[in-house]
Image (tube, rainbow, N blue to C red; front, side, top):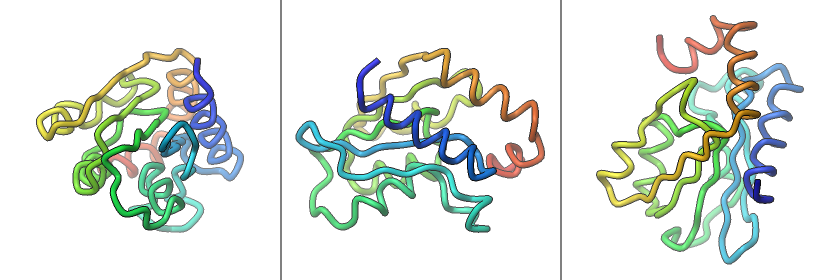
Length: 143
């Protein structure tokens, strides 16, 4: 596993340690992490504080995003995929899409390269969380 996905997993674990949803993300440009984030919906009482949004916010205004790659432990949802498309991020590397299939097709239709690494650790983190706190998870995905 590369260091960028490992950093995203570390972010997911931070979210879990904060009693939040364990999804993490990092934004990479020129081989360096320029933004980090994790799902903070519970911690901030903010329905839009998804990991990828938190990550992009932490990177700040960088001008063009077309030469960045976003790593996420879970396939981005439509909210996050919309931000990815809006800002012109051209590559998404997801840890998994088994526990939530996300918006991969939407991103691909808008010219984003999407790679699903199918990492067991990412799946285990999410399965355990969904089993322990289904009401929080289903709130997060709007069900």
